[in-house]
Amino acid sequence: MSVHSNTKRVTTQTLQEMKRNGEKIAMLTSYDYSMARIVDEAGVDVILVGDSASNVMAGHETTLPITLDQMIYHAASVVRAVNRALVVVDLPFGAYQGNSKEALTSSIRIMKESGAHAVKLEGGMEIRESVERILSAGIPVMGHLGLTPQSIYKFGTYTVRARENAEAERLMSDASLLDEIGCFGIVLEKIPAALAAKVSAAVEVPTIGIGAGADVDGQVLVAHDMLGITHEFSPRFLRRYLHLYEEMRTAVGQYVLDVRSRDFPNEKEQY
Ligand code: KIV
Image (cartoon, rainbow, N blue to C red):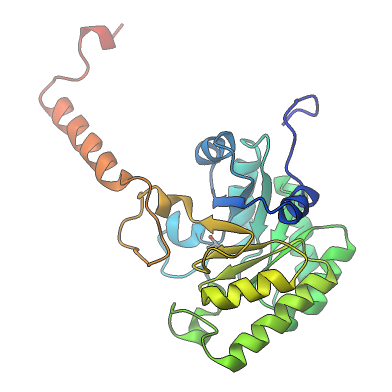
């Protein structure tokens, strides 16, 4: 965005104010320029360059294979499209778990090379030192608790987390910790709605739910899922606003027929 633009940018302070005023926060993923333009123009407050790009863009089974360089490529493409939304980028698996210095170095690369505004990390207590070190460099951090897909091989499944008391208590204390040390928001993925409501009431910072019910401060979905570009993935929490997979496949099929039948291009479509 030009520094002279009149559009008022969403900042981490804006999100805090929205929570205080009871205004819900809308967040969606984007991984490329064209999608980010639509998402930003439609008024989404936070754009997440999620490591779900590993699944959606690259076709991997998990989020683990995506690299820091690939995340930076996606993030820089998104940043070029955005005028208003806050752009948050996932630190990918392997770019922060080693130690807090590695976490800071990876975060600095994301901020410098993509122009994004914040980073997101999965985990609670175990990443405390990394979160503090990133924050001390002036980089805003968003937390992510509940189902944390980078730990899929530890969990074994993508089912709802923290149904049992012990895990719910641990999640509650992780959320309080992330709140106290200065994260500007926390994603709560696939946890019982009652627990998400309790966490949201207990912490100062906005909570953003995905499969966490209505009593959180905002919602996030993967844009390709809510637009129906992906179509094999149908969890209960997903609302599909379009069925673009079918529409796009039909359109492409029609193009193939038109080329083969010599209908395309016609006289008006040539020089
Ligand atoms: O990578 C991602 O898209 C995410 C959201 C599902 C929250 O982390």
